[in-house]
Structures are given as C-alpha cells and as structure tokens.
Picture 1 (cartoon, rainbow, N blue to C red):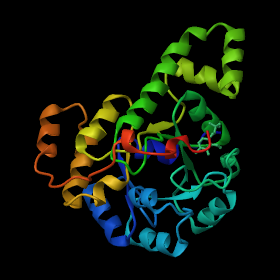
Picture 2: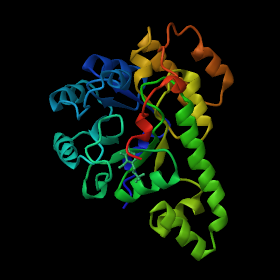
Picture 3: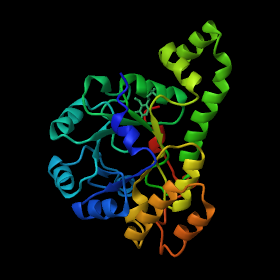
Length: 288
Ligand code: PLP
C-alpha cells in the first residue's frame, strides 16, 4: 500500500524550493534531486500574513518544462481538490503543507485515494504514522519554515527517533501495543512494523530552518534521509554556491574535512528569525 518508489530514489538528496524556472535550473545544476515549485518561499509567506494557497499551475508547468528532475508542489492541508488539480497537471509529488493556510483544520487529505505520491510534515511519531496511514509516501520534519532556525527540525527528528526507540519495549506485549496504537490513533500493525524495523516505513526527510551546509549535515547525522531547503538558498548572496555546498554536505554528512571545505566563503547567509523571537503561533503548531 505504501508508495515508496520515487521516495527511495530521492533518498540522500536535497529538494530545493524554487519560485521561477531560472531558480529551478540553478537548483538542478547544483545537484538537487528534486525541486519544490511555489510562488513564494516560506520566509516571504511568513511575512505576508495573507492566505497562502496552491501556486498557479501555469507557473508550476513552466518549472516542469525547465528541468528534468522531479517537480513537487504544495497543497493546503485537507484541500483534496487542489491535489486533484496538481495530479491532473502530473506533478511528480504533492506536499500537503502546513506552510500554506490549512483548508481543513481537523482532517488531512486521504492520500491513498490518489496515484501521485504525497509528502507530509510531522513533529512526532504519532503524527508521522497518522500521515503514513492516510497514504503519505514520505515524511518530513515540520521544522519552523522560513526562519533559518534549525532547532525545531532537530526537535522533531529527535522526538521521532526517541519514540521509536522507547516504544520498542512494547513489542511482544499485545495489550500494551494496542493501548499505544490507540493513543497515537494509528493501526496497531503499522506501529508494530515501525518498532520492529526501528524506523518509519517511508523515507524521512528533514525540513524547516535549514540554512547552511552544517545544518543539512546535522540533520543527516541525527538520522534524516534527505533534506528540504526552502528560504535558505535564494535568500543568500550566492545561491549557486550555497546550493552546491548543501548538496555536498548532505552527501558527505559525516566527513568533517569535506564539511569544512564546503562551509567556507559562502557569502552572506539568510539572516533568519530565531524561534524565540517569533510572537504568536508557529507554522509547525498550526491546527494542533
Ligand atoms: N498539523 C497541521 C498543520 C494541522 O492543521 C493539523 C490538523 O489537522 C494537524 C497537524 C493535526 O493532525 P493530527 O492530529 O493527525 O496530528
């Protein structure tokens, strides 16, 4: 039931947010494994305060025509008609994303009714397994998009990994497993498989707040299987160089000499906003 094909191919790669065909070409040349086509990058969405919807299909189509790597695009949480439209456009992947304004605050899209694969955000194991149970083929940390602050993404991957390790003790105790599955609101078989394998049954990427090669390598060392970079790259003074550096850092994430090399002389990085300075609700907490 789980659609893992393309996600397995993207594993170990970097998926970059792009708002124009020109940016998509830069991303492809830098070695991105896919691009996320959108109208505004999260740092700008965060500032706008407006309703953020699916991007214009015309713009997504231009990006699809400009590159040969897979193209992803975002729909609002619960907006299954935006997903129908993007499936008709034949995008390679749909991100049901908290970065856009949710269309439904209590119910996500039933993703297993679609042919196109979906990626969804998660902050903990229960959320990840609920999305997988709805049909998500890939999970990403929610992080805190648009901030350039890595701490939320670190928190989310650490929590998912810790819960998987902690609940392992429940294996063999059917009643305890049933209780935990009910608490997480997921089928017991899905929880069991995850605990037996010691990992989610789909690819788990990092997203939200990645701004440097070191950020990407940090999340890979913490157990992520690939990276989404949004605001970081095209908010920096030398996007080509930074994009390539983040790809290199994701590939060679435990090679300190390589990380030193690619972290040097990158120009001005995205300024960012620290988590502590954010007043009001965080994107990662929307709807919870
Ligand atoms: N994340 C976002 C952005 C939401 O809007 C919602 C609510 O639908 C959730 C998570 C909650 O989903 P769940 O309760 O299945 O984790």
